[in-house]
Length: 319
Image 1 (cartoon, rainbow, N blue to C red):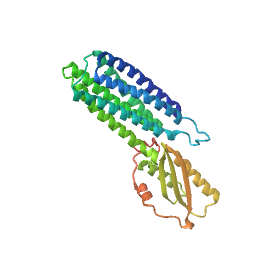
Image 2: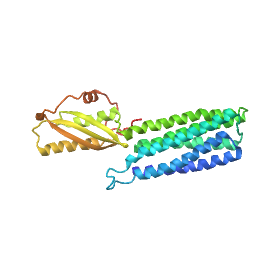
Image 3: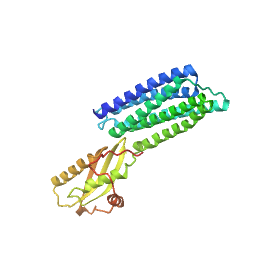
Image 4: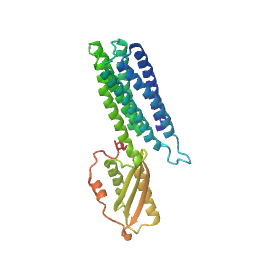
């Protein structure tokens, strides 16, 4: 399946799961009045709303290139991830406010219902499955939006677990565990929102990829038999993709056709690395005196990369 089809399918699965969980938790909350279950219902409702936003964003990002967007629409994807972060912050803040209000006002409402236990346990299992599914897909398809979705689903495992602790606490005579567990998990939710923002800001501000990928880019250029050296190597994110510019040093007696063939071979070699998009190669003939030492390039060449080039070349992003 193509990246576009796979990403959209995953978005639909996440949306459907959140709608079902929101309905189930909402019904249990109306029946029991449990703060922990109510917080979980609100969490799933927010998840369903932002999953709709994510699905719309993923539809835009997977559209083919057109005259107005010749490189495609993938650069929208970090903004989708930031929309997810807003949903995460909203959820964490809501859960924290509700739990602290209950603790300070001493109005804890808990339930011993076995139905609540079953629903929360099922939600934790479902979210754990969605976390692994989304995380694997984000790595396979190099998708920051799916990576953010995976982190949010990991969050939901924690919130469902905390709500379960609260319900079990009521069952064993300690109802205060209900809001206390919710308050503790809200901190984890808010931290996940910070993680999502931290991981996606470099996509938006032109951050550099990992040094391992930069090293492999440089080594692919230097692997050409006619390249004597390289300098001014710049690799940076443009959305979730990477643009590369590099100066290569060659002997000045090459014909124009030979220089063109060298440049084309290096562009093709570097573009074979995912998620590299555009590659710009500047050829410096020796006789022009533009060969120079580049400490950063020298450091990268001397470095080690334990992964061979024939393994997965996907850079996992700045996070």
